Length: 496
Image (tube, rainbow, N blue to C red; front, top):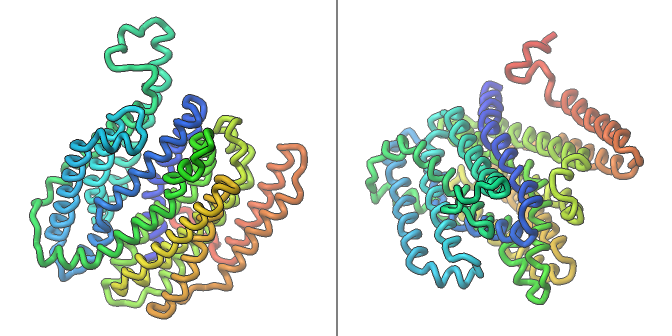
């Protein structure tokens, strides 16, 4: 139980930066729906999907590779860190050089209204890629608070500059101070200021991490690096296919509707509503930050910790279902954060949230191929999932629009979750408590159904009923699996 307490603690701390920080960052999407055109919201979503893909290519799976080898007592942690950081930094700078050299051609291909958008995107990618290894270094060395502080500060900076450029600068012009800011501000450049805000915050983050960057000797141990890359390279395919599973719809959506002049606007509506569901992704990310060091450090001591892995997955599902119910039960309040013209896309929210829950469980189940050095299975799974997403989008987007994007993600992660479970039980059996997990899944779906069936006209009454349903779920969890006395820090107040 001590290990689980440590996992809960680290998840909570990483969640401070990941969940709270991203929640603040999440504010940007509703903010954009009020201040930017729908097509611009769609374009931002498209650009950040491109960013996510290139980050996977530049990081090369070395985050997990670093954990695997630096956590091994037989390896020199300093050499592992230096080799991984050198590779990522070299690839990143080469990438930026190529983008800068072919900026015009790339901008034309992307249809960017301003060629410098491409340079800004490339610079953001480079900063974030190089910063990824120092952040992993902080995680491995158990510095969750430092990790959280830097992440959170970066997000606050991004929000602050967005507010400055998109809200305050137009107000300054309105108040007669246009001559003071005309040297850097243009009223028709809102999309560019979104990118500049991100770049400034990413660059400052890199400066804050410079202490850990220059801790490395920037040298390569070719023998060590060969072993790390053999382990990590399948994870590049895994990560690339996985990120494509999440972002392909936003990349190709407008091109699947070439005759529809509103395609970019539809993408904006879909992206804005998909962001409502991102709170579950925030939790998964926070859990991941704590779970990877948890499984690798515990695995390396030689003791069989499979029951602990099973418990971690069970509590992940319990928490994920709770978050799902909170969002669904209070969606009438949450949805007011975005402009009413985007409400038409609300129907994708529960589908995407369930897909995200499947994705999180798939990540938890992936420990079997990471611990047995069969990472090629992760690559095959993700490639298969990518095929599902491609077929689903290409075949059905022209017929049912962005609903096809949501259902394709749902089908993809459901199938991957099931495949990983059955393969994992063959190579690295973990005693998951499927009966108890099934109880929680059925209970959550039943409570959701009750909420949908008995929907009163009064919003206050509806929220009251939904709160009661949520308390029923919490009560069952406490009764079956989480006595209040066992909760870290506050449990002592509930002991008999």
